[in-house]
Length: 143
Image 1 (cartoon, rainbow, N blue to C red):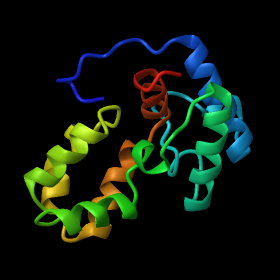
Image 2: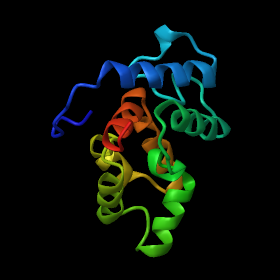
Image 3: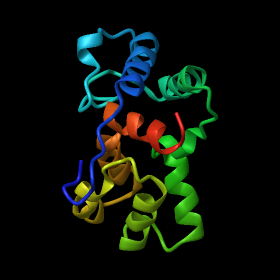
Image 4: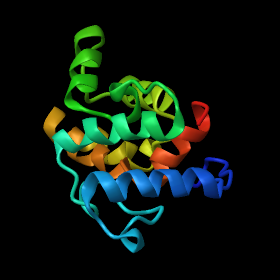
């Protein structure tokens, strides 16, 4: 996580619930689901898996989750680009940091600004999709 963010320890019950969801949804071993594991690169999630993960998280934590709020996706990027001046500016990144406070977007801000297009930006942003980010989302949104 970004060094300028105050880190609150993740409660064990939230981590255990997220871990259980990811083990079931992605057919991975429990020792693979650690806080810094990336959902795509380390655990092998594909785009269709994200819908299943959201559904399972809703059931596990008895909460409603907007699938576009928990992860940054092409849809999030496209929506912002339609409303604003485009993906490759500081306003875009600050907007993402504000709307996705549980993702460590600040650590990748310079890389995103240097990215050549929305696909490159999304690839960089997917680095923030970690087990820890999901746990923090649950913490912030009442899990």
